[in-house]
Image (cartoon, rainbow, N blue to C red):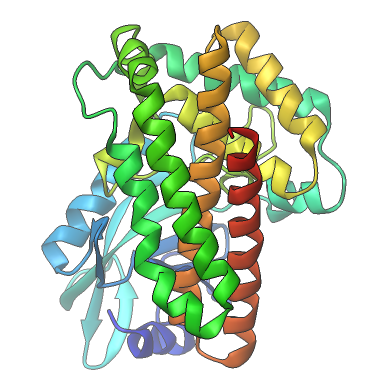
Length: 336
């Protein structure tokens, strides 16, 4: 579907069940329509270096994959996949007849007030929340598939991918940020050259698992038990990672909220259930992974800025880009 079709869907489309007033939530890779007790997620017809939603058949496959993978960390939230159809210019979901124009992941809508990022903004996340969440994530990591073979240095390539945004950020942000990217890539290459043995040892020790892949506060509802949703289904390489890389994302996110206390608590709680930092090398690797996760957030926000619909959206995305670039640099300075 196109952006125009989505807005037509919002204005005059038909959804299963009772009538509702649809609300659109847009990300850089999907549209989520909130309607009544349900949410319908439709993937944008796009292709990036790390994902491919460019064809209808491909979007169907990744929608089905999304449901299977996300059921691992949620309960009664991911309900299935339904076709989005069109008939004489009208869009609807799941009914008989009409032409299939896309597919939607159907989810049971959660209470937005319990979304972890919102609770963090209100100062309402406690150590108890972190203990429950750490226990759930650690138990999941214990049970999920162990990755036996992989290129442990692929994270270096992914880190360096930020260079694709360097020219754009030089022009629209500032020269200092563009230079910071060059220094960060040099620091990352140096770290990888000096610590490759640790990565191979962790692979042999079974630390690489089929994880969630996108573990940050916006993808968590702090209910009982926690609902951890929206994992990466479109790229196995981004999901099959070191568990230390996985939890570094959430700890970096907590640091970005200025809650280093909660970041440390989560790591401590997790490490008691599933020890993942046993040596000084592991501790340094954890810091590196936090810098990598800051790097990823900087790139995502740079992409958001590129596709912004107006100057206000672009400015917001660029401010976030700058924030994560500075956080990435702060972590790397700890490794010097």
